[in-house]
Image 1 (tube, rainbow, N blue to C red):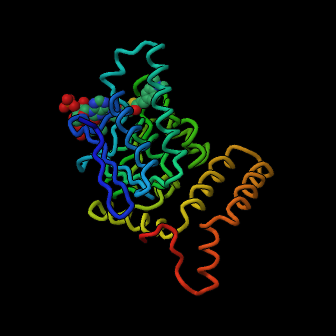
Image 2: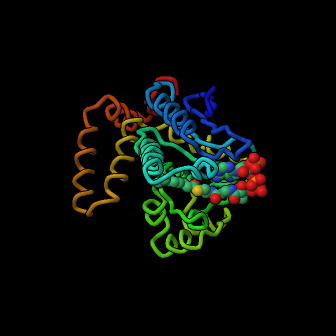
Length: 259
Ligand code: DAK
């Protein structure tokens, strides 16, 4: 049985991490199942947007499985760290936007998974944090890299070295999340964003995400080169022909057949 529940409707896949007795804490099996589920959504032509959430009303993901980590030595920890990092890279590199629907605790590895997603929407009850230093370890699934890129170095330094918890409204104020909504509106809000994305060209979306991702780590000049190449490569494609013609013909574009 998989730790991931998959529900696909109207080109939006909802992936629910389901390990409720451990607040959806992540072990190797969850990493494997989540990676498989994401790859399968990326390969599925009936999916255009992915929403990632946690089961229950208490946690998105309460972190890596602390009970399992207790037994790790440096070699196993390196493997666990690498596997978790690969999963976050798979999420971040997805050509289909992945929206984190953060429905509760997003701590340690949970916060790191949410930060690898392209968009974060939090319920009012969400709690973020990188409490690894409280355990004598450090954020090892990209927290030290993605948090400063999202919120700036000074705030990331404080969050990581204090390990303190951040509530949803603070997360919004520092730019860690895009939106905060009441719990019962969380999935609606994510679906609304997903529906808006689905109206647009899938290749244009995928290439935009790639330009943003690759441009962040480089100079403006190098980033502009990536952008102009991606931009020009879209011209002459069926998708760009459809989008540009639809504007001229004063009609809505049809990029995905059914939408
Ligand atoms: N791991 C395993 N079990 C967990 C867990 C976790 N992270 N978080 C919660 N649980 C389990 C609890 O043990 C409890 O199970 P039972 O004792 O009932 O069997 C059950 O979930 C319910 O939790 P609580 O009873 O504690 O519930 P409360 O409402 O009282 O508290 C809490 C909720 C989220 C505040 C608390 O559970 C908590 O503090 N959890 C731990 C949060 C945390 O520290 N998370 C960060 C984990 S460290 C690496 C790369 C990355 C990482 C590690 C290595 N390498 C490069 C090697 C990532 C590290 C982390 O994520």
